[in-house]
Length: 84
Image 1: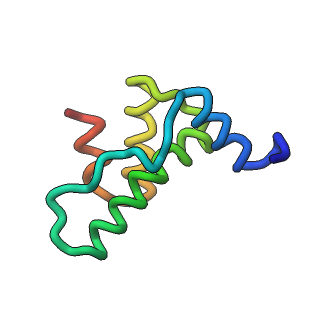
Image 2: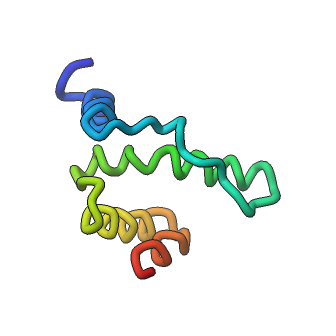
């Protein structure tokens, strides 16, 4: 991929940190299949935001990213994750 593309930035982020979006734990406690699918995709796309914002997978980086996700998605999990 050309180095100026999002795909390159995303693949580089995954490689640099040894992450695989398909190895995330399954979504629990959501009974409806369609809502579980949405939450699965939300969790799989989390590292997209790391690549877009250049925030590292550190505690300060995750806190900043969770607040960004809260304002982007409106999901309360962003606020809960950033304050607990």
